[in-house]
Image 1 (spheres, rainbow, N blue to C red):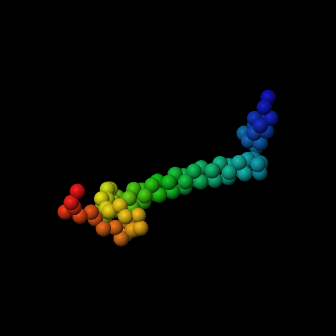
Image 2: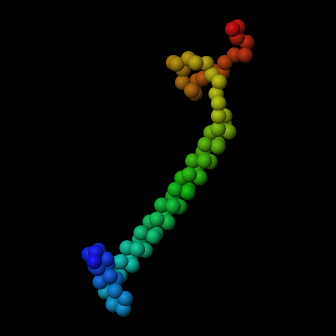
Image 3: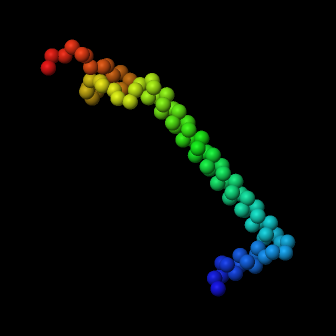
Amino acid sequence: MRYELFIARRVAAKGEQSFARLILRIATIAVAMSMAVMICTTALVSGFQKEISSKIFGFWGHIHITDANIFQSLVEASPISKNQDF
């Protein structure tokens, strides 16, 4: 028999009220609550991320056609002129 199963059955025996059984219940409730909080947090963060990206793409757009000047930042980018002689 596996020792872990033997110990678990001895500690969580039905009918006995012991301090270890109380600790096991508290630990189980704590793990369940922490999992629920992590799921809610992940849902909240992904919702904020989608909302922020939709706002940014609505403001800037998905594709930017700008001059290929390396020394210019994205904030200072000027669009390409339509009247270029190729």
